Amino acid sequence: MLLRAKTFSDSGTKLAASSSAVAQKSKVAGAVRHVNNLDARLIKTEAFLRTQVVVDDCIEFESLGVIVGNAGHGKTFATDAALAASETPVIKTLFSYQATPREVARQLIGASTGVSPSGTRFEMIDHCVELFRSPMVAVIDEAQHLNRDCTFFLRHLLDHPETHVAIILVGGNGCWENIAQDPMLKSRVYRRIRFRGIPEDELVKSLPSYHPLYANAGEELLRELYFRSNISQLRSLAIFTHTAVTLTEEENPVLTEKLIEKALLLIADDDL
Image 1 (tube, rainbow, N blue to C red):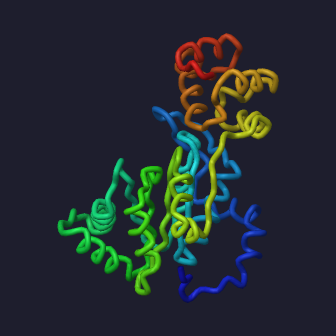
Image 2: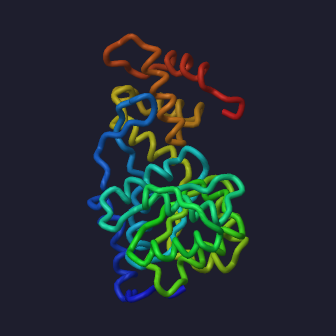
C-alpha cells in the first residue's frame, strides 16, 4: 500500500504527544446520553482518547484503521466522536452477516449519494473507485463479519492509484482474528486499537462525576459495585445507572447497598 503524497517525518513526534493533545481535539461535549435518555457525563477512557489519533492518522495518510473490542465498550461511540468535526466527507455502513463485495459497495455508494444503485459486482466496485477519487472516509461497522472476498475489495480500494480513501473498520468479537487470517489485509493496517473494560481504579475515580447517583457514594461501595457487576463495560454501566435511578422516587438519588441489590436483581446475568 502506498501512502500517497504524504510524509511520515513527523509521525513519531505526533504520536508521542498524542496523549496530552488529543483531549483538546475531542469533538464530543461533556454530556452524553446512553440508555433511555440517561443524562451522564462522558468517561474519557484511554481507548476513547486514542481513537481520535487513530482516525486522524488514517485520514491524513489515506490508510486503514481498525477499532476492535467486545460488545458494549464504546467503539462505535468513540469513532463517531472522533469523526464529528472531520473536514473530510464521511460515509458509514456496516458488514451484514455473510456480506459480499457487491453489497458493501452498494451500501457505500448509497450512503454517499442517497441512491441505492444496481449493477454487477464489478460495476459496483468500479463505481466505488470513481466515488473515492475525491477524499473520503469510509467507516464500516460490524467488521467482525469481514470475509475473504470483502478483504480483497478493501485492498483494491486502498491500493488503487486514483482513490483517496481512509477506511475505518469497527468490529466486535472476532474482528481482529478475521483480519489476521488475511496477511495481505493485516499488513495494510496503519493504526489499530482494542477497547477493553475500564480498570477498577480508573472507573471508581470517574464514577462520581459520571452521574449524580455516584457523587456521594464512598469508594468502598463503588468498589463493591464494580466487583459484583459488569460496569467495567460502558453499556452495562449505563444500564445499571438507569435501572438504579428508576427504582428510586428521590429527586437526587444516592447509591446505597440496598439499591445495588435491587438493581442487580433486575439486570444481573448468570456470568456476573
